[in-house]
Image (tube, rainbow, N blue to C red; front, side):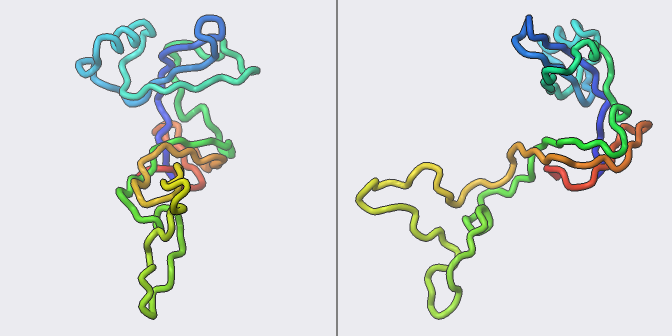
Length: 174
């Protein structure tokens, strides 16, 4: 899978003393200054970087050195090397309203000999007590279009001049 990885300017550095946790906020996808509202414009001006469409935070581990990251510095695909292992987070493909068989992998009932139970959900609860459907019961509904993380994908190749990474495995989204 080909993934675009940068350029991502560091917009803000959060510290344990000031913010209660250590993190780095980066931007992605340049945006025209005309399209940025005034609070965000002030946020980017304070960092001295061009406005970006997307802002994301990455927490730093206990042992990680905060001084390694400087506001205004740009992170690109050059940060990664062949053989690195990465986690990819994205929004999965939306599949709309789906039945229980597709959404939850139910096997369904017999399809012949006059069976009236083929793809339906079957029994969804008891009768008099508790006289309701228990919360969390798997039923038909909206499927996909949710935040998904795929872990441990290996970097096969890095095209640093184009800011592209080739990963072994699939990533969420279209």
